[in-house]
Amino acid sequence: MLPFVLLLGIETSCDETSVAVVRDGRDVLSCIISSSKHDFETVGGVIPEEAARKQLEVMLPVLEKSLHDANVSPQDLDGVAVTSGPGLLGSLLVGTTAARTLSAVWGKPLIPVHHTLGHLSSVWLSELKNDVANDPLFPILTLSVSGGHTDIWYRTSHTKGSLIGSTKDDAAGEAFDKGAVQLGLGYPGGPALSRLAESGDPTVYKFPTPLHGDSSIDFSFSGLKTSLKYLLRDLGEKAHDPMCLQNLAAGYELAICKHLTEKLEVALLRFSDVKEIHIVGGVSANRTLRDNAHALGTRKSIAVRFPQNLRFCTDNGAMIASAGYFLVQEKPEMLHAQMKTSSTVRLEDVLRS
Ligand code: KG4
Ligand code: ZN
Image (cartoon, rainbow, N blue to C red; front, side, top):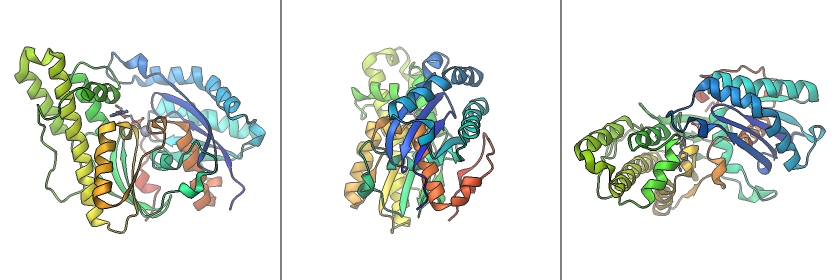
């Protein structure tokens, strides 16, 4: 066991500035998240330069609050983990520059972490102390669903695994965001569309489940977006009726969630030794997805886990500290890794089966 227990985690890959203190990759002592997403509600997406400018402003206050809430001082820390990519380049540079500086000034090791590896580790995060007994068991099938990717991983350890399925076009979060724009909702659309869907009836407007009956583990969401566009066109004025909008949102949301769980079921048939299913990333906060996945788990007698707290589903510094911890446990050479900030680095190149 490496003497490496208390990590600071910094995440700034998109519109969030988040700093967390995590012990042993699990216990979250603090996790501060400041988001500029409300600035982009009406423009339908993040403006990269604006996001980075805001991150520069809030980085130090977020850092100070994180250390204060965790009741630790820099000397107590064993290292600084930071998202090195992928993400918006300007945003990544704010986080990685802060991390490099802190690491040099405090004399602590710097651990570069792939953003998606952070999401994959978010299931380990706990607000209880020393929740080791509750640790997930490998091999794990992890569905990672966010605004930037929709992937299924077969993992035998934190650092070993292979990508077994991926989206051919949009990501699941993008499907939520683009559907929300069509329904007249703000950015980010996932939570707004999901709230609207809560009071709707998903059986009124039936959307086709993409790649239904196909034996691949791939995903595709662009057809759903087009179906919604044509439905709205055909409904004309009626589409402005609040009840109609709720029903459309419910049908659209259900189709996305059914597609995700159907492909998880195909993956389970192919990888019958898996002990658990994990669902991570922003879309894993979705209630309908959680219900559908739990129903699949009950039917297949397999444990299904999500991040324990909804704030660990979307981007946060705690998942980066957690991934940094497990990375160093399994690959101690990461302590001396050169950090390359990259907006496009692939997790397939980080994980090896
Ligand atoms: O993981 P994340 O915070 O950032 C990326 O790495 O992309 O995911 C953000 C995505 C957005 O597309 C957002 O609309 C979606 O997650 N999202 C949701 C929900 N909460 C966030 N989608 C559906 N239902 C939600 N409750
Ligand atoms: Zn993310």
